[in-house]
Image 1 (cartoon, helix red, strand yellow):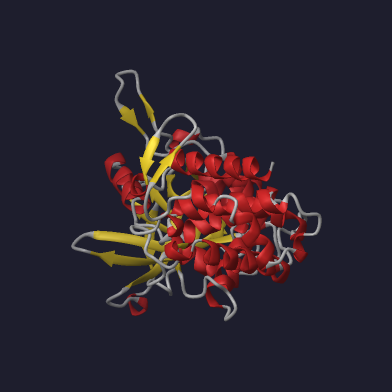
Image 2 (cartoon, one colour):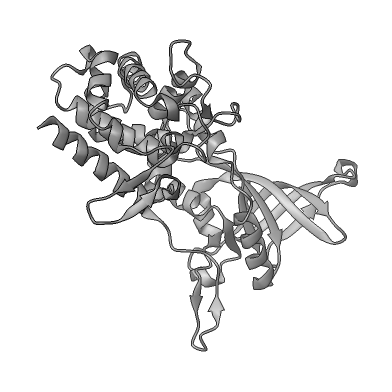
Length: 374
């Protein structure tokens, strides 16, 4: 890319690609540090007539910080293209026709640069990627090259339409993302990195020959499982961050001693299987033990049980069974009625996987457990 001498312009090699009957898009690479020189963000707001203008939400500082930290790491890779809308001030100069094909033409995008301009009159608007642009801007890096897909228009409605279409694309299923995390060693955003270790445990619990949960956890590659992985992952995050498994965790790295964690988990779930055998292995519609509420409450109870033991590695299956027997008759996973201290009475199959029911069942089980131990 070059700046011309006569006029302050940025000349960027690009490919012009025809789409549909009249549409054209432009693909090019550029140092992301240069983007603020010629692009701005069209913030969503209402004008003096209360009509909506713009389309972008405000920057999310926590998200920008996470991306910035990732970009500053050694192996940073940002393959997703940014989407930019240009006004007609930006032009495309096609090179020799011999460089053209049915797919597109090679040439140069000519972008006017005037750093004294107000943001609202710069020639480009970021349609998709504002958090990435902000992170690159703030990153402690000399440069960071990015891919850009651009289109030329002076129509705000077309910009807004593209923004909605880009951001309404169906996201990857959470089950797929979770299943991919254990095999990912690179630095990840905090919201994903905290799920890596729990998903490694789920992977092993679902595959180890000596696991009582083998083949029972529903994942992208194990669709016939009966226990949805999500509640199990969420429960394990709690066990690891401030529960019984914290002692095996490395707070610095977020990693942990997987083998020791698995030893405790396998023994505990074996005891759950034995204690509540009639409710074990049934689909959630027939057994609330295999349901999100049952899974979450059992993991909270595990923390309570292990808090009474100095060395949790030595707790055996038989010891877990002895503790679980204290609340066995109070749990109604497949038949009967739950009678809660607040006077609420619920049939076993009226318990749903919602926050209120999870909290109510968990508090009841923990309360009954401690009452029985007195």
